[in-house]
Length: 375
Image (cartoon, rainbow, N blue to C red; front, side, top):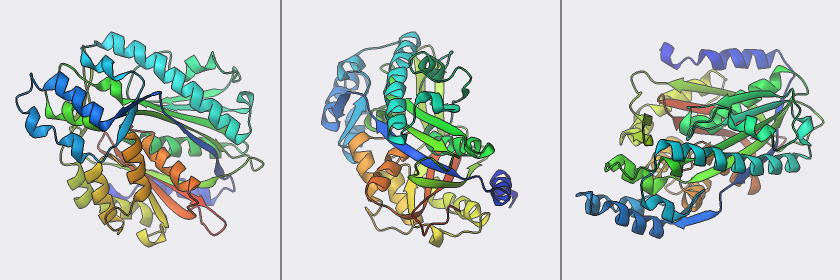
């Protein structure tokens, strides 16, 4: 079927075959804001906010217990969520706190790579939880001494798929010129999408799942730079007629979450064929993957991914650790998983994977160690 051919991924593989330019992951760091909210506290505050106004709250309250989340982090104290806020206030808070997290993540990534900001050629900024023009990386230019001619690429709208697709776009840019150094920054403040005014099941589920976080990585095609891993090929698949599966509705009070209960079923029924098509276009099968690195969107999503990759229940341990400690942070979450795997000594060929609005599946090969292939 043409829907499963991944034409862009095939072209990328052909270009890679003709080129000796390699993109490497020189650093990868993760950052969270200061306010840690235990799930028990989130549940109590949700009861304060919704119980008297939402007749079905008692039936849905268990979503906090079933989410497999111990705590999350927020850019704001939990008391902020006890009253309404309009889009103007949320936008101001997004710009302030996204810039602060990006600043922290960027400096840590540069330090880990052993580079100064003047050595960065490209800035990539990924986020879908707020709006800012000038964009956040432009604001960062006034706080960190990047060169005035640094290339900038802000990416908006990929949602939970943004971590993987940001990795792919940044690696493609790094490979476009030998010696290019790129800094990718991924920031999501999902907590600012909390809607005091929306008495819906989706809003309550979002209240039980989402947290804030950021990640940053230096991706380089300079062979002299340090290397944690080699970045291989990436690809994506967007299903037709799925615009209502995941995303935002936007009104005067901000972003209102869209996600359907069907997401785990899509993973069970349709994701395997798309995964296999991506791998086949690069001469691979699932057996060539030493370890998947998946975005843990929720407990049921991880359950289905374990089946797809033939892992036992609870077998995707890094994904479950990240979900428990941080909740679903949208785009950065898969990079938290990747950092966990690298820190715990994972070797071989890994497939990073996430799902986002569109409805979209995203893939990128990451290889660690001498025996890996970097597809």
